[in-house]
Length: 64
Image 1 (spheres, rainbow, N blue to C red):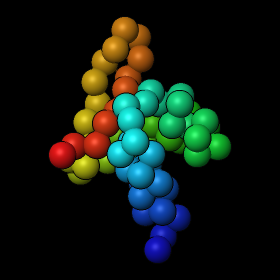
Image 2 (cartoon, rainbow, N blue to C red):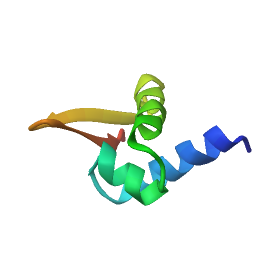
Image 3 (cartoon, helix red, strand yellow):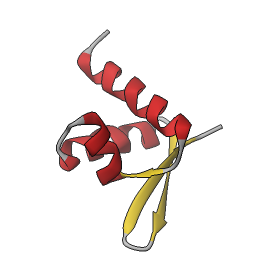
Image 4 (cartoon, rainbow, N blue to C red):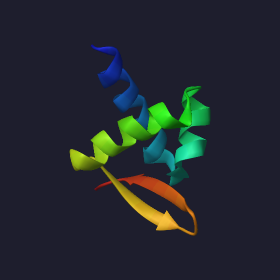
């Protein structure tokens, strides 16, 4: 499995537990927020997760 696919799988696993912001996800993955954002946007584009705006933060959940 490529590194990118592994990160995407971890993100989906994390988001199956609860809604999280970009910063919260980055912290759980021990990655820079900017890098995490790239993975999140790719997953949104693929239709695997959903992005919503809460205040000034983007929050993500798994699409069911």
